[in-house]
Image 1: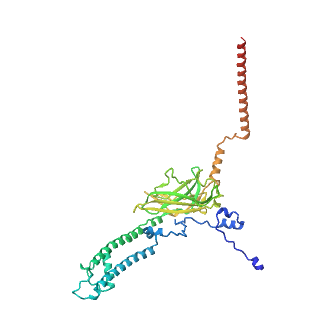
Image 2: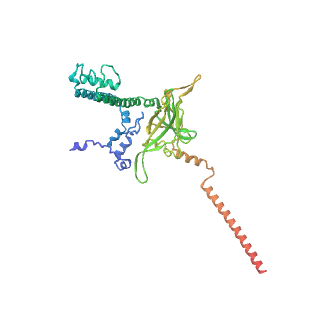
Image 3: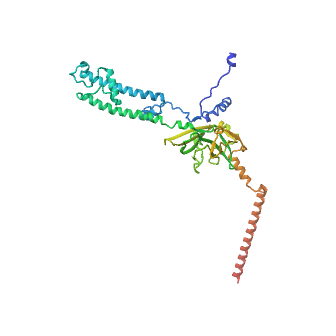
Amino acid sequence: MDQDIESPVTIHQPKLPKQAREDLPKNINKECTKRKIQRYVRKDGKCNVHHGNVRETYRYLTDIFTTLVDLKWRFNLFIFVMVYTVTWLFFGMIWWLIAYIRGDMEHIGDTSWTPCVSNLNGFVSAFLFSIETETTIGYGYRVITDQCPEGIILLLVQSVLGSIVNAFMVGCMFVKISQPKKRAETLVFSTNAVISMRDGKLCLMFRVGDLRNSHIVEASIRAKLIKSKQTKEGEFIPLNQTDINVGYYTGDDRLFLVSPLIISHEINQQSPFWEISKAQLPKEELEIVVILEGMVEATGMTCQARSSYVTSEILWGYRFTPVLTLEDGFYEVDYNSFHETYETNTPVYSAKELAEMASRAELPLTWSVSSQLDQHAELETEEEEKNQDDQTERNGDVANLENESKV
């Protein structure tokens, strides 16, 4: 019994929303703060979301072409081989049945008998004839005769259906081969994002680059903040998406990606990082998803590359190491330093606190409480003197009117 009491008890972390975890014991909350943040988008750009309990699976069949393109290569090749094999077997069986029903099998070698298909003496030869018909090989050994109208009709049907199968399967393979997903492998993002001062303003920055000499046409960059929130009405919204302005209104989000570029987000009042300081940043549960889009210059197809940064990958008080140098007649990019950063002097306060400090620094040095009271007293004295002068003028006007009335 004592051993049961002294044995350690493992408390499993419940899967509850944030507002529900506040009422849990402190030891569980400590475990929650130390746990690893689950990514919404992985560093390689793949979304870490799995769709479960999808009951309307028939919707995948309504768009069978996209479904086949999205399949993995091993399944795609398996379906490709099976479709052709089943088609050849199906029509081969029909050719054999026609020959069997007409009695061609019983007159093999009979020169006076005109078969539906010459030199068709079994299922194997019927299968080979089906392959020759659908692929239009035409070896010339097995041919259809004009004494078999049902065979002529079957030949037309197999030719049309064969063309449809060829167009569908070859088109599917071509689209899958020419997908620009692999082009995104040569679009790189910096391992970390940094926060530092730029032109007197606190900015969040990350770097993007293209490893190929063929450029991305009409490249544009977007950024999203993934963070759960609770509304004023108490509604909990998990993984809420908020836009991060990276130059949409100024056109800086449209890139000429010839050399690596540093994408900057100014932390202002519209920024979701407005009230976040250096000390508060590690406590935040957030993720920044960056999306780079453009057209592949060689194919003209749209390409998209993605990456993400969690709080542990956002470095406060750092800048990126320059990678572009001027050589003899050209510029050289050193990708060995692409992910490197160096520390710089950066305030530890949030952008909101820095703005408040700046507004207070703009006030005069003599501006104080006593000076405000003195100025207020002077204004009151001036108003009283003005009121007395107005009263005196009115009294003089009244006296003049009385004298005139007496006269």
